[in-house]
Length: 523
Image: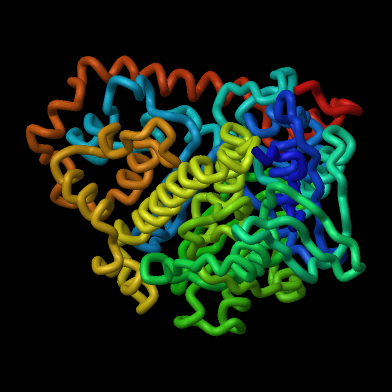
């Protein structure tokens, strides 16, 4: 029985180094790790968002939150603020926060709100995070320990700096061997299992298990194993982004603690606030708008906050991508993680979450010998296939609930023929009840029912004629007003209390930077 003694990771970046750190932090690890990456590969640091799960990931590898904030220009993210997605009007906005509605396990507060009408936006009623996140307040105080919080949060990070920090941490803490070089050849045995990589330098890297983090090139999973790429353009057709780094107007400008997603005629613009700058990008479908027009749209957006001169001087870059994924990202003794496994537009920040998912599975089910490759790969592939389906469904929900039909882009985005059967069934059932736990029955669902509630009720314009007319199915899951009014009153009181107690985002980040430990914490 051949044991796994050498793990070789091809490619650096966040995917490669985060995987290296997770594997390096495994208890009783019996294998060595080598990461090989090409030198001087251009990277784009436009700002990237994470889910709250990143806190647990950082804890697992023993990386201090204060180090992350100091070294990666990071800020705290409390959710996503959507603007212009329903009608495009100036007052068209809603929040998808990271906090759950009150008594979420047993009470469907969304059904109560749905039956009683549109008195207040759902997110304002059910979580104090709405007030805190939209008024530049932080989700914790400076004396709160790393990863603890009053309100749940993830991070906004400079992706380039984050990868560099993970590299330093992996090498110094977990003794990951770092090799710079270009992979020129791939060797395998008679059964198709990889055995070694040939570098242009003439060196050879031997391994028992390989991780493909080579990005869109997919050097191992694509070029060598020829695992098919499944396009998702029939569901989510965006395939290009124009990106730029936008300076703050003044050094002490407030920092948004939400990713802002603002709908445009042919896509949407993300706006991520880091400590020293903002990362913005216009995600769009190149079939409907030229690169020059998309670039100007991005400049026009930036002009609203930094003025015409700064906006026109921005350095803009264009990123092309094909939305889709590999149906079997693990084959033989090779698994793809990150862009080599797939990518679908960055709405709801699923890219880093999928890297976390893959790395966590490897840690939990690492194949210590070749006999376990088959069972582990099949379980991994089933899980990733389910995750990709969930991402497509949840992102599509944002488009199909829109009332916009003002451009050919939005007409295509809302086309009912591109809705999956699963999403179509959910939309039908929601005519008689609000989203609830039966819609997301798995304990490891990427998006809980609460996420569907925030989007479904945030895009409430689609529900005219449905709000206030719930059938028996909805009533079965709802509590009476007498039951829920005291609960929602507590939410309002908590929001006011936190608003008085929480510092501003920049104030908190400055305090955490000043109190940055010199070494990482113990895992």
